Structures are given as structure tokens and as C-alpha cells.
Amino acid sequence: MDIVLRAIVLYAFVVFVMRVIGRRELSSMTPFDLVLLIVLGDAIQQGLTQDDYSVTGAVLAIATIASLQVLTSYLSYRSRRARKVFEGQPLVLVERGELVGHNLRRERMTPDDVAEEMRQQQISSLDDVEWGILEANGSISFIKKN
Image 1 (tube, rainbow, N blue to C red):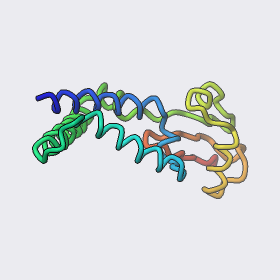
Image 2: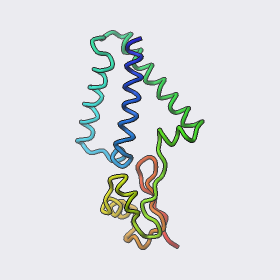
Image 3: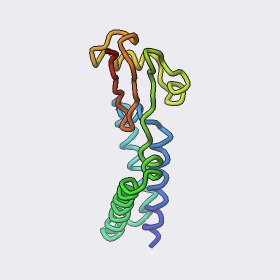
Image 4: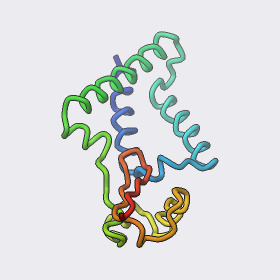
């Protein structure tokens, strides 16, 4: 039972950390981020199982985390409020060709980050953009002016 409780606490902590880190950071991983993710996984495993190296302990930990993931997914599907908490909402970064500064600061993004994404989508100027929206998955969608 100890492993199940540890799994629940660590799952909640990981969900919290992922929300704090931000969408943009999670959508673009660098080699350093990959190494950090591996270290994080190892640290969580050590805190989860402690000195229990049994197969039963591992099965309990994995089953608990998988169950929590399914529950989270189901709650997100059924409840708009839960979806907002677990997945976030789209955020307007560009409105009628102008950057929305407070939303950029909120997501810790620079105008250069937006410009880079625009170039990748073959958009040369903010004047060509009606809306730029940071999606819940971390990508940026641009709607061009007519």
C-alpha cells in the first residue's frame, strides 16, 4: 500500500511540475532536456519504490500511475474544468498583427520565439498575421489576414 500512496503523490507532483514548466518548453526538447527527463525519471523511481526491488512493487507502481493517467484522461474528457487544469487552454500571442506582451511574459516567450515560428510556417511579417495562438500542446497556430 505504501508504493500506491507514493505513486499517487509523485504523479500529482509530476502533473504540477509539467504545468509550471509551461507548454512551449515541453513542446521543444533539447538534448539537455532529454538528459534532464531521464534523470527525473530515475529520481522518481527511487522515491517511488525506495528499497523495494520486487516485481510486485514495480507492478503496483506502474499500475497505479497508469490508472491515474487513465483517470486524468477520463476527467479531462468529461469535465471542461478538469481539461483546463490538466491540459491548459489556447493563449493568444498575436492579435491583429500586434504581439500580446502580457501573454508572452506569462509563457516566458520572446518576440524572437514567435518570429522563429512564423518563419517556419513561411510567414515573413507580423503584419500578415491576424491571430497567433499558442495551443495547449505547445505549438503556435497562425491565422493570416485576408
